[in-house]
Length: 216
Image 1: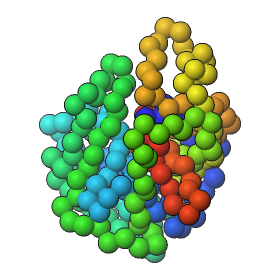
Image 2: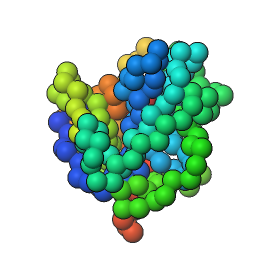
Image 3: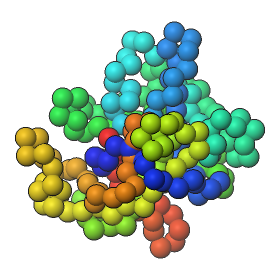
Image 4: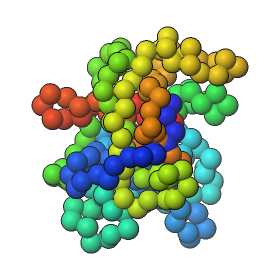
């Protein structure tokens, strides 16, 4: 997954611009807490980050997923839907390693099929072993704005991926580098706490989007 962490200096998204994007809250002790973003990849499947869900095992009661949303605070927003699932409705990749932050992948399983429309659509998955270095991409989410203020409006930023060789040369030399990481070039627009689990996508010539990374 992508190792970007937060959107700063992003732009406000428009309705229907990112129909694959979701955000979800978790319920702990009857209180809802905004957790992470995710990506619709099928009628019953949401792709997200393992670290968003792993630390809440045993405490979480339910997951509330916002679909088709741009302004999360506006419950009457056109196209916005909410699906609530039970706490056990997710699967974390077995190779997930919290210490190394590798294989940071989880799936939330929905109890019913989503009805796709202009506001709610899946992103495509990449072809096996496909390479995405030096690719123009988009990252989106509801993280912090300017590093400190939370936003209710979906933000996005254009970024460019870089090769593993370049990424490894830029990273902290004390940290191990993993070949399946996907890095983006340094930019004024980056991601924030709250964007975790959200998508890094590549736009296709037919207007569709392929998810090539997860904000980790």
